[in-house]
Image (cartoon, rainbow, N blue to C red; front, top):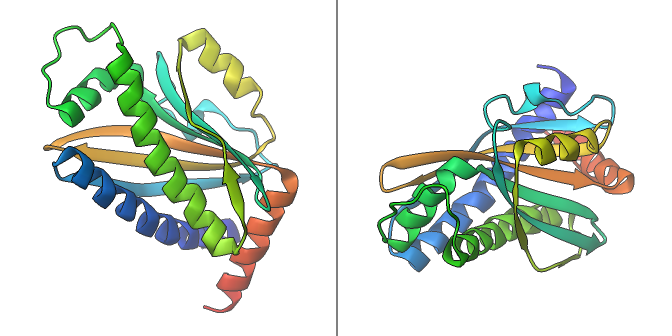
Length: 204
């Protein structure tokens, strides 16, 4: 296994513990069993472009994105991404309300995604902060709907960036919705993460 591959496996194990805790909290909130898993992640440490091949099935069509910024000792931005055509299904499963209009997004849809995003993003970034033993301050989450053209523009800005891509499987009531969590780090924060992963890898 290559060096990046080993680091990705180490990080995946750590993050899955944190998303598991987030799933337990969400399950209590909606009174339904929710499963969250990160089956795969990729580390792009500024040497490679972020392209469609990194999220081939996700970055098609409109997306709903819940994002937070984090700073202090660890700095960057985290964005939880779901295909917009799955949002109504996801929010109706969480609220227990039937959905008849799949294309019109209500304030409730945005509120549900904001709450889901807040819990999942804080779990992942908080887990990274604990792993690195670093203090983190969070911004309030923002939720936006992006059309296909806007998505392309966002991706262009991420070329040669220091990025962690988590592929997220969200399962509720027997229905699975696939999304992604993209964490964009500052150069220094990515270096801190890679140094810590080096340290853990040497100890194995």
